Length: 358
Image (cartoon, rainbow, N blue to C red; front, side):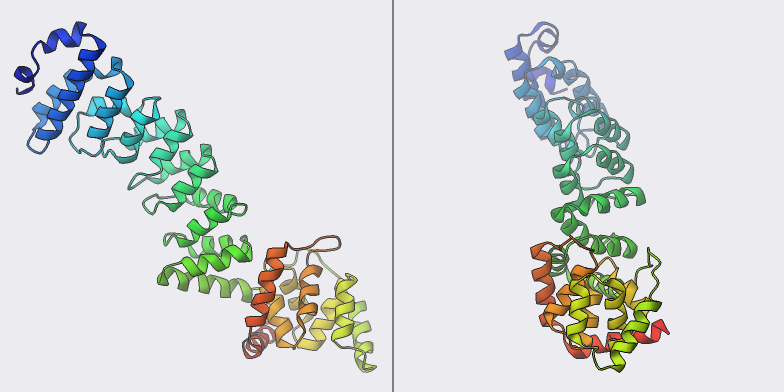
């Protein structure tokens, strides 16, 4: 074997060599292996593995890190050495192996992900492919930065529970939401949930940065969210308000000013009954639309009956309840969307809601 004549006194160095000699020997052996790796057979790999595993654990940090860097991408690197390096506490040693080595098994990755810190989790999250059982462990322990790295990795696979956890975390992390929105493996149901729980600035950015295929999926999800009224959580009695609005209409007093006043005073039943009378959309449908997860249906119905922005804004505020206000960025985004929304598009949606309500 070539390693023997190239490194005189190898046995003595392994057993009794100084730290400096051991480091030099490790460097020489690992470089020699890299040079011969394309032609080495199993017996050569086994020989190097047996020698290096006796040297590497007690070597200084720089020597161990050098071996890890050289062996990280080799498909036939000495397996015992690779496994040892992968489990190192020092991230500059373990990192290259965890992020690139094809020899680290799924079982080993799970064990390391359960035991090590955030830097090790981040390194695993950069692998070309990551199985769902591994990502499940990472997601249970990872901080925000590691989760972002994992979500951005197209080679990472997620279980249903893993995706659910990611979507929950994305509700409070716009950067994570953007990464999830770009993933083509997210289910239509998952994408709708992600969009419904994201603020409008994030939804818009998600669409703008998506690839053409994913833009279609995002657009379809948004249409379904806007067109599907949310189930009512509170049972309200609209009968008194309906009688009042009918009398107001007969007297000629049902107009936008009256609706704006109802909304500003948080007279919810009267406001909903007024919108229903002015739009022709059944009152229960209007109730569901206003209480939905998004304000888009409010913009559509307001534009469809020709309301001013001030009234549409008051209806957005109404859905939150007294003493609550949307964030300034959300309100500004809503205003811009309202300005861009055409009356003809809004009126077509009203026709759909009228028919659906009936």
